[in-house]
Image 1 (cartoon, one colour):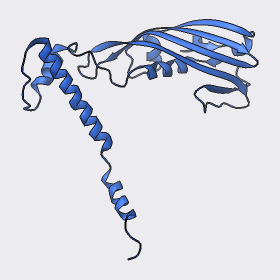
Image 2 (cartoon, helix red, strand yellow):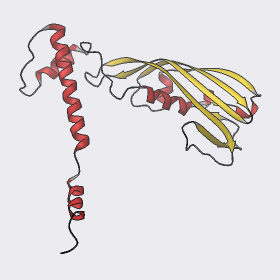
Image 3 (spheres, helix red, strand yellow):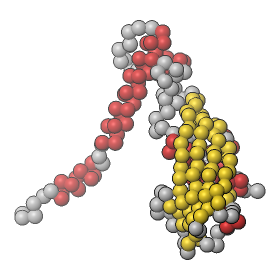
Image 4 (cartoon, rainbow, N blue to C red):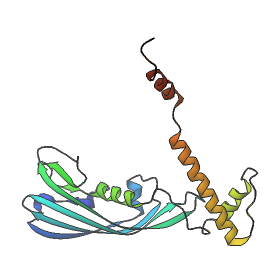
Amino acid sequence: MGKFTEFKLPLKSLPVGTHQMQYRLGKQFFANMESQDVRDADIDVALTLEHRNDLYDLTFKLTGTVTVLCDRCLDEMELPVDTEYHIVVKYGETYNDDSDEFLEIPDSENYLNVAYMLNDTVALAIPIKHVHPLGKCNRSMSALLKKHRGGRPAIVGDGDDDMAAFEEETLEEAMDVQSEATTTTDPRWDKLKELGNLDGGE
């Protein structure tokens, strides 16, 4: 049995009408997907499939949690997942997935495997930045970061409020660095732009 056999929909054998399917996405599902972000998961998937006029209308409802690493302290943290995905599938001559809401599959295919659809839907539901709420990061890691600030002045205060303030400042610094990195250009392109701005009348 393949890794994702249970996610194969036998479209051609489904009678016209509405069908309900249930799936469960756990740790092994994302391990099989070789996901770099998801460490664990507990997600219920409810699929409503309506077969009408040679069209298959699929609506996925995903609810549960995923476990990822905090970008700030590297401890595991849970994030909620509550999202939907809708797509219309039709048989045709070739495979065509140019649209996010419409999929055409070859008439020779008896099944549609929805595993990758589910994986992509979860990936899009996870925020780009994974960070604990302020004050909830691993205290040892936060203290270590604070110790190695490179001579920056210490934050006045103590306890959780002090640590939360430090975490907030650290996150802001990381975001500033990321912003600067995205705006920095390759000096080779800058030189080419200068050549393009030269007058051709010399």
